[in-house]
Length: 65
Image (cartoon, rainbow, N blue to C red; front, side, top):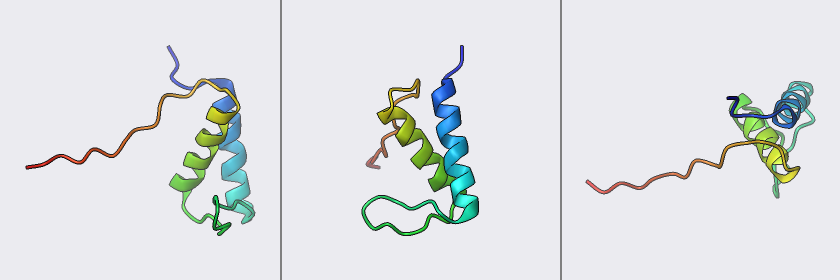
């Protein structure tokens, strides 16, 4: 069973193309995105908002030793 749907794939693909062209911008600050990982995260976030099949976000866990 696939974790990601078609919509997620197309949104991520679009975000990566925009990043490569230098036109992908991040949230409030509006700075240009340079990292591939951030571009993927933006694509997945857009897919979530559009109602695509995308797993929930992973939360940073703060474990105490």
